Length: 433
Image 1 (tube, rainbow, N blue to C red):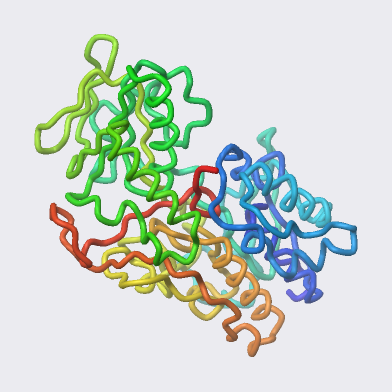
Image 2: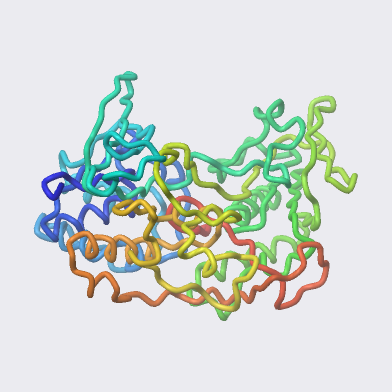
């Protein structure tokens, strides 16, 4: 099987970096991207500015691959998603050339001639990826190993507080959006609601708050599920990423100025069409009426349907890789940040299969691009047989400055026991530029 390529699912930041590391080690790769271009998901939030600076957004092996082409790494500043693509991810994809196949949706992964149940000779068989192109034609690709870097962007969480769409959520789909808005000017004078407690929600609140400043008749309501807003505003001066800290501070200022109405402990149970607007009803009976538009920014979840014939180990709560779940669980996570993870922590019962990038975190928050780059560096080393390099930790992640723990979900007061509920978009959490 050593002559077969390593299949990489997803040509996003981690998928492209994985390819660069494997090529550097002389291992053939085949990158399968569902979109028509590299980093298609990042392009969808191209209007959003990251709160990580350029040095934290490029991978070392990718830089080594690009530099002979005349490319030079941006030295400073905070790019938008579109700039991240145009100035780094697209050139990297160009350098990888025909190793990337676009318009290729992976519908399933299995072992050749073995379904999930069969033990006999399983590890000696190559992986088989089932692929469907944009015309509906099916094909198969054999691979020595598989790296799933497909992300979570395609599966946003619903607004309903119990993990399922609220009553009436599907019927109100023309008024409910699950992405950070770009141009909000057409919402001037209306009542807009944001549901969610993390960076994506804060970003939307800032855009809408500025709209309310320009057009005072605009109403902005921010609904939080937790009884406390303590950790919504981040770690402040204790955050190692200053732009991330600034995001929370600016959101708090919007509330203090009366531009945004913050409502805590509001768990959405139902959307009702009333006249020309929506009424949002909470599980406790409270409601928010005369709503024109809703931005449900409650995070994302991994799509594991294509993995159903593989033997994988995911945490039952987070749907994250089991080997890293205890480190990233927001219910038990303590002060500060998390540790870098590599091939050992990401290993699955299905030998040679790895879930990386934001998908490795499942529903857990605060995934950083740096985390993904370290993951794929370690996995590439492992697949090449360099186990010393695979075990080495070459990354110290920045501290969030947020203290969390297994605090009460319903508490109204702030304390160090209130678990952080920060979210992310695409490969990195984001902030307004």
